[in-house]
Image 1 (cartoon, one colour):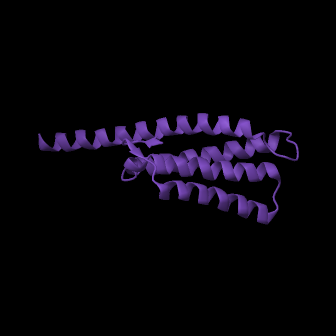
Image 2: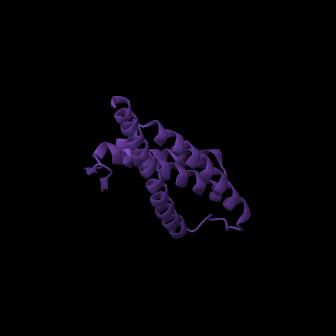
Image 3: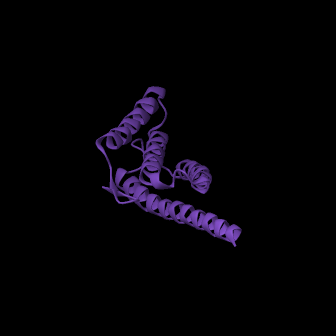
Length: 133
């Protein structure tokens, strides 16, 4: 799988992704929360792990981390609202719906994060060029 900057995921990165997913499942199973909340926690962990790993070239840009934190808060509020209002069965949210939502939300967030990080880099270049003149 290619990530931003034309790099492939390494075995270690895949291990981190799956490890965090398994840890999220283990913690939520151990606490005995309802299946829908377990689904929400695992979904959130996987989504944000993939976003952070895929956008590694933007890590050094402060705008990236601020925007990621804002998107995380919006995601958590939206997930709590959706899971609280939907009448779900004992098996939680159907996994196909989670998969589609993960893909769509992940792509939208990636676009916002990458574009804003790139804009912040251009702003710094412009300010630097203005100082030279």
